[in-house]
Amino acid sequence: QAEISNYDFRWEFYFDSDRVSDLFAISPFYKTIDSPIIAAELSSPDTVRYGYGNVDSATLKGIEFDYRQSLSFLKNAWEDFYWTVNLTLVESEVDTNNPNFSTTSINLRDGESLTGQAPVVFNYSVGYDNPDSGLNFALLYNFVGERIVALGKGTEPNTDLSSTHQLDFVI
Image (tube, rainbow, N blue to C red; front, side, top):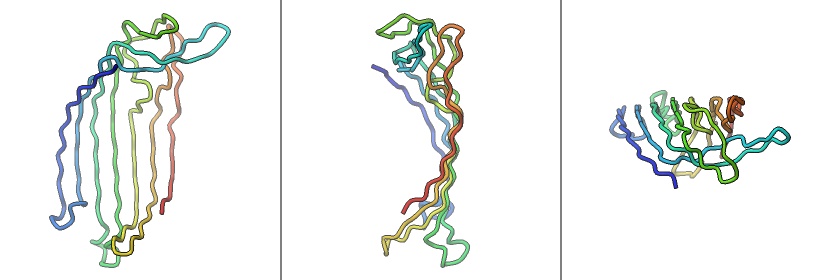
């Protein structure tokens, strides 16, 4: 069972006391994980397969920036429109000593990034929300940086997932 210790701080600045949704925030964080679950390559020369198991520990440190604002400053006709921006930057590192994979004993490289953790996540949205009519819609963009899907064993390369871009429209 993984145990997580999380240390974070959030500083918020509100642009207008009447609109608590309009803000800028900075949130540095630091996390330690004892016995995190990671994915690793368990391949033999004839087959490629992946497995999940625990390693000693992992650390994550980073910072998140959050900005939300109503577009009402343009004119009253824009009061139900808003935009948001969120950026998260993360460094992670895994201590792969004593891997515990039930099916096999493997040798993993120390100091790799935590599997599945992207170093950059960016979100942007622009939308409309009218509580009186119940109508709301938004255009959302999401970027997730390249990340490790499974750690390679020994000198084998990691299995990586390329950066992804996603555009959504929701009503």
